Image (cartoon, rainbow, N blue to C red; front, side, top):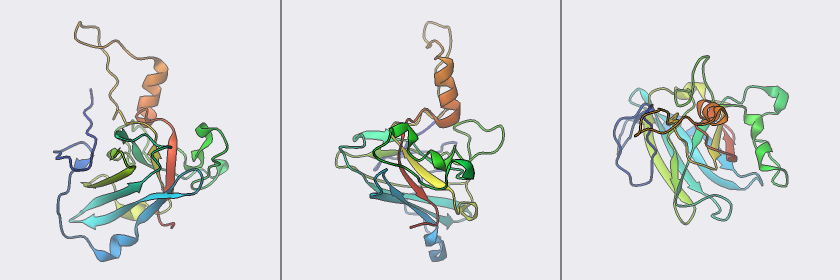
Length: 207
């Protein structure tokens, strides 16, 4: 099985397939601070920001959230991904109507940013999860090498309702293994980490 690591505020993590946790790293150019997305919920209310900066040849990601605890699960991990936002046939950017079915929210952002043949959690746009505290706040800072911030303009950041399983679908027939999940669950894992509904969205470069 693939190994995935989720990032919680205050956690101490090691190396993951996504990158290295940054603690107090320097070398960030002030000119990079404009590469960011402002996340909003389906009603258009601002719930946080995600910013990207050059850091010693890699890309540092900073996440700051303040969500409504009545609308987003707290004391829980939430998947976060960069979405391609390249198919204009279903809308552009972060389109959602809070009065409509939740499954329709932000589908305009399309699927995860990826190259042909990539499955989750190997997509270009797969990021570490964030842990939302009891008061609805979340804060994370880490460095990844798979994302070049110069390629991010116009792409969308999505916060999901559930935790990301990072491609882990437990399978096996031995007594100490799980049986295979359904084909539907396996497909959802390969596409999204089975992270559930899209609850917030922001386009890189838009305020």
